[in-house]
Each structure stands twice: as structure tokens, then as C-alpha cells.
Image (tube, rainbow, N blue to C red; front, top):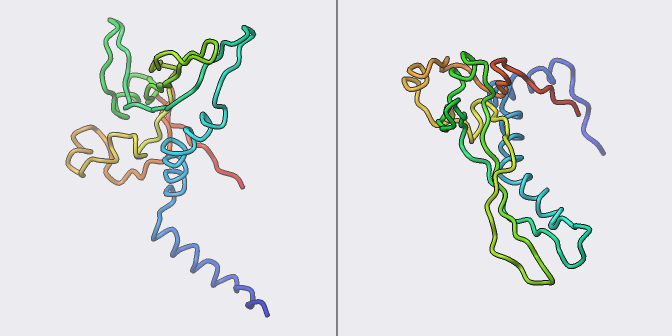
Length: 166
């Protein structure tokens, strides 16, 4: 025999308890962290190789890494960037993505190379975000609201939220 359905008022008690326990954005952060730390590599592993039109020549894909949030300055130098600076300078809060890969020629694998393949927007307060490792005083010193739960991206200086639908 199945349990009796929850009454409407009982459902709201559960929702309120969940929000008190996890907050409104924990699901976003957990999902993003899982994608960065686990799923991205699974996607690369699933692909495995990139075939070419040249017989006996293909590329074997290896480890994928998402670095720390950085910005390339006009002089070509790279520096770390924090969310507040990205907002002020109309920049995207993002980190470089590197992929280790090697050429295979006639079944002989060449030395692996770690190549820059693009930028990954970093979710504010995710495991890749500098703010997730800061105390309240440090957050304030970096121009951040210590009560900001995160769970959003900064794209060209604007805060953007992805709405999750199931």
C-alpha cells in the first residue's frame, strides 16, 4: 500500500525546510561543480579521438582542465580576475580550458601536448571561483557582498542566471 499524498500545507513545510537547509542556489552550484569536476572529462572520454581524412592519422584526447579565472590585458599579460572587477570593467568572469591531446600516426602515439582550447564562464561562488574560499572580511575587501549566495555568471559585466527546467 502506497503512502498517503502530502497535504498542500505539508508540501510548503518541506519546501521551506529545503530552502533553509540548502538555500536557493545550492542546486545551481552543485550542478555546475559536478559539470566542471566530473562531467566535462566524461564528455571528452566519450569522444576519445578525433578522426581525420588522412589514413592512419588521428588525435587522441586526454585530460581536460579548467584553470582559475583570468583576464588577458591589452599588453598581452594575464592576471587573475575577481567578480567585482569583471562587473566594473564589463568583462566575462571566465577561466581558460586546457586539453591534453596527442597525435597518433600509423599507430604510434606522439608526445602529449597541453593545448589552450577556449574560455569557460565561471559561476560565482562555485568551486572554481575565488570567492568560494574567502572569509567575510576578504569578500568585503574584494568589493563583494558576503551574503551574496552566488549561482550566476558575469558575462560582459552583466550578471546572468541560467533558469533550470526539468
